Length: 179
Length: 160
Image 1: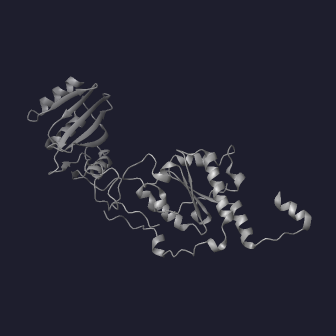
Image 2: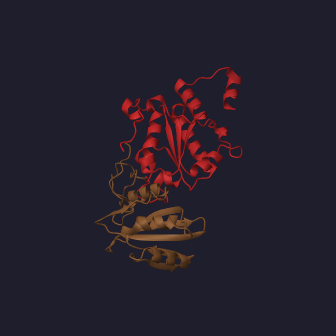
Image 3: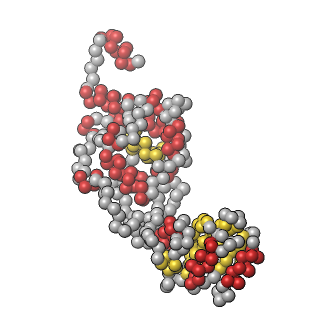
């Protein structure tokens, strides 16, 4: 591999911390599986031994947003669900990326209707769209590889300033409903 | 079963006009909405009928008719294995019906759905809230005047 052959010659190599961090980050993207409907089944399939997402260092699907840096939105997002997706996305630490998986998530898909958001890019910063209904696991892996390219090219200066999230927006309203 | 049903209903309620429609091997019963509760109670309790399962409640918006909405109750008799469709008509100006959730418990959520989608209110309903749309939503999406793609801003999206 590239790293070892360089080490054999000289015993050391030079790089920047920035590039090293990006390389490490790109090689272990931890996805947050936002499985809302049928695309989630294909997302699960991409984790099984046949397609094996761990070849790309992304087998650690975390069900808590605090430990993730990639959100895979897999499924139809309704207007009611959009607030939940956004709330979970806001809880992910920077830097973070988003894959819009499938036709519904990217454009509303076949649900051209009053209750389905016509593309999650209306409220989320989407990096890669995966086409298909649902996309095959290979397609999701391809999207992941594109994300890896993007992550590897990202440098510290590209990161946005830490978001100013007020505490109110993260609090869950537990009071009983008005009626 | 069909003959028995017709006989029992006309025998027990001589003052109510029943309309029987038979289509695709299924029986539909139509009558005025003021008699809904008494007739439904009878259908559930009477020996030989025992319609004890309320499968679904929905409505039809005819848009231009005088009685704009038709409420449709699909009820089933588990004992006799017989399905019946009950229809009552509701006008837009007096858009309310007595609830049948006191007769069939399953009608509770089905009526909430009809209220959410068509704006027909159910009198004496124990918990008449919206079923699917957010609570602050002001429209009734399955009415014919509601546009397919909705009214922009009717359901707010989170900020980007």
